[in-house]
Image 1: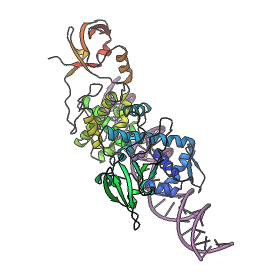
Image 2: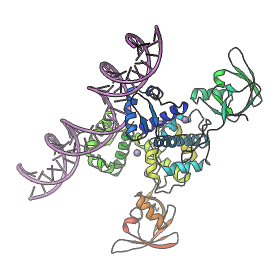
Image 3: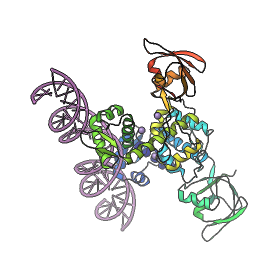
Image 4: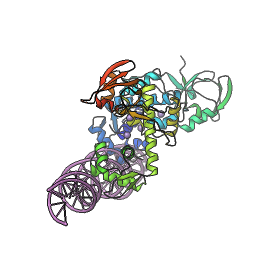
Length: 218
Length: 218
DNA sequence: ACAAATTTTTAGATTTGTCTAAAATTAATT
DNA sequence: AATTAATTTTAGACAAATCTAAAAATTTGT
Ligand SMILES: [Mn+2]
Ligand SMILES: [Mn+2]
Ligand SMILES: [Mn+2]
Ligand SMILES: [Mn+2]
C-alpha cells in the first residue's frame, strides 16, 4: 500500500465512524484538502484492491480488509504519539504532525516492540483508544462535559477537537487529562459553564465544554 | 526534498567517500538497483537544485549543500539504528531496513529529542560514526583486522560489510563489537587467521578479517 | 414533476520517478 | 589511429497522484 492509499483509508474510516451512512466524495476531499476528482480516482484504485465498497455516485465504505487496514494505521499513529509524549517529551499539541509521518513506517516488529517499550498503553495523549494488534479496541465510556447536568462531573479523559490551537488553549488554562471537573452552574444566556477543576473555579464557554470528554457517570 | 532525492544524495555520498573521483552513473545505478537512465534523470533534477555538480558524461559530486544534506540523513539513519538496538531490542542485523524508512521522517525536534534520549551516542551499532547536528563527525582511528601483523591486535570497533548475512555470521561465531582480538598466526596458504578473541581461540578466513575493524594501535 | 443547485464523475493535462531501446560520447584494444 | 567496447545520455512510454474544466447523475425546491 502506498502512503497516499493509507491516508485515504484512514480518512474514510474516520468519516465512516460518525454515521452509518456511506462516506461522500466531497467529505473526503474536504478533510484531505484535495479535489473531489482526485478522490474519485483514488476510490477506484482502492475499490480495485478490495479495500472499499464503491458504486458510482453512491458514496464509499470500507470493506473488512479496509477496516482492518485502517485500524492498523491508527494503532501505529497513536502508539507513536504516546512515544513522543512519554519518551521524547513532546507536548500533546506537537505529536500529531510527526505521527502522520511515522504511522506509515512498515515493520511489524517495530510496532510490537514500541508497544512493549510503552508498556502496552490503551489510550493516546488525547484520550483516544489504541487498537490492539488484531484491531480490537474498546471505546471508553465517556460523555461530553457540555452534556452533563449541574452539580455532576467526573475525570477529564479526552478531547474531541485535538487541534493544536485547542490543546494549547487547554494548557494555558491548566486543563489536562486526569483533572477532576465538576459543573457548578450553566449560564442560561450563552450556555457557558462555571466549573470546578481540581479544586479551582473557572468559567468556560459552551464550545470548550463540548470538546472535553469526561468519564461517564454510572 | 523527496524520499527518492534523499536516497540518491545518500548513495552519492557513500560512493564519493571512497575515492576522490567523481561518482559514475553506473555505480549509482548498481548500488540503488535501478537503471542508468533513471540515474541520469535524477542527477539533472539534483543539479537543478544545486545539490550536485554535474557535467554530462563526467560523473557527479555533491555540492556543499548536498554534502550537508547527506550527513543529515546519515545522522538520522544511525540514530534510529541506535534507538532500535538500545530501546527496542533489535539485533544489529535487523536495524538497517527499518532505519532506511525512518531516516526520511522530517522533524528537527524529533531527531534532537531522540539524540538526547539515547544520551548523544557517537557511533551506531555497526561502529559507524554519527554526525552531529552540524554534520561534523570524527572518523574513528581504526584499521582492518586483515592489515595488522601477527602478535598484535586490539578491540573490535566496527564492521566494514554490514549486511545481515555477515552480521548473523558474526553472531553465530560469538564475535561482537567490544571484543579483544589478537592475531596469533596468519596462514601462508589462504591468508586465513588464527586469532584469540576474548581469550577464546578460533580461525577465521581472510575475507572475514578484511571486514572487521579494530581500534588502531599507537 | 420539473427546473435549479449540488454532487460526483469523466476527460485531458501535469509532475515525479521509473523503464526500454536507441543514439551519443568516452574509454580501451588492437 | 581506427575499431571495438563500455558508459552515459536522450527519446518516448508508463504508472501514481494530482489538478482544471466540462459532463453526468443525484438531490432539492417550488
Ligand atoms: Mn493524531
Ligand atoms: Mn498519514
Ligand atoms: Mn544502516
Ligand atoms: Mn532511504
